[in-house]
Image 1: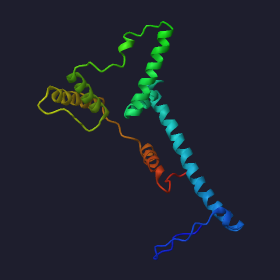
Image 2: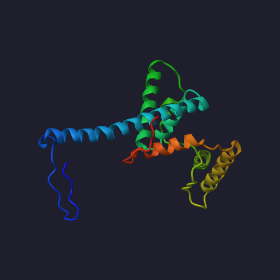
Image 3: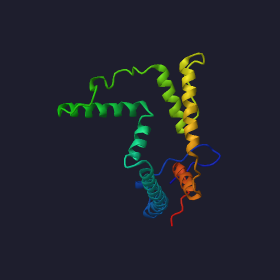
Image 4: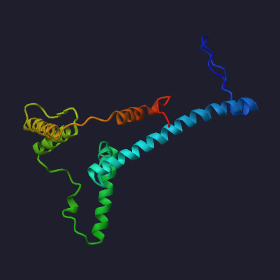
Length: 191
């Protein structure tokens, strides 16, 4: 393939596959095959590592633990939240059709009527339990601000009381390597 010449800033017109002779086309195909094989091996290794980690999650959190994590990820975006609400509305409709009572199904998706201080505490505690940086959106003079801080502290206390565990070196390296998947040269070693 034609490359941009160094120094002059002009580039030669791109050579297409139809314009190459058979030897050029084979050589370029081999170059792409080698790169593709490396990336495919990296993808397979990453897929296996992800599957294995899913098994650890299920062992620690139960059979629905992985789905809980996927739901948390989905709920971190407005689109994911809307999709999950739509799915819950669909399920509530089907249950209604089958005369299965599910409580106050009509008010399931109305505006949250939980008092602001309770929601602030719950969000602060969630941030603390998740080990996130505290992000208190409430003005410092409000009860909501104080409750968010209290919730965060309670979450951090609960997190600290269960203890922190260190990743084993192989798992840490696997996670680092997975994060580099987007780079131009994968760092996986296939055995």
